[in-house]
Image 1 (spheres, one colour):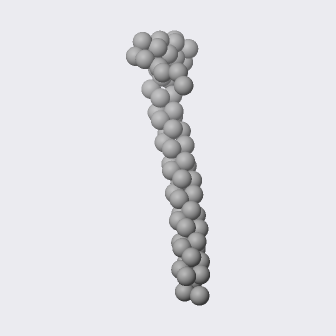
Image 2 (spheres, rainbow, N blue to C red):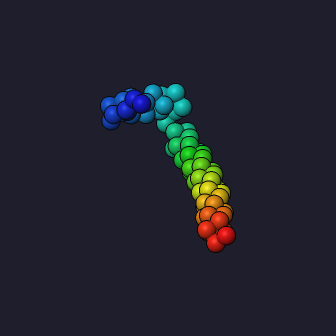
Amino acid sequence: MPQIGWFELLIIVIIAILVIGPKDFPVVLKKLGTWIGSIKKYFSDVQADVNEITNIEDEEIKKDEIDEKDE
């Protein structure tokens, strides 16, 4: 995965300011931050759901193993 350094980031910001304009740049950054926050929250929720499902399955497997030992 390529790494972005400070120089590359500076070039991206300068190009974005030139394309978007200095007046609208803060608005775009705020919207971008909101979108990124929403995406992070979505993936966090999905990860929590997957962890919950796998924990339930692990508990069922452990119960089955205990039941087999008792028999």
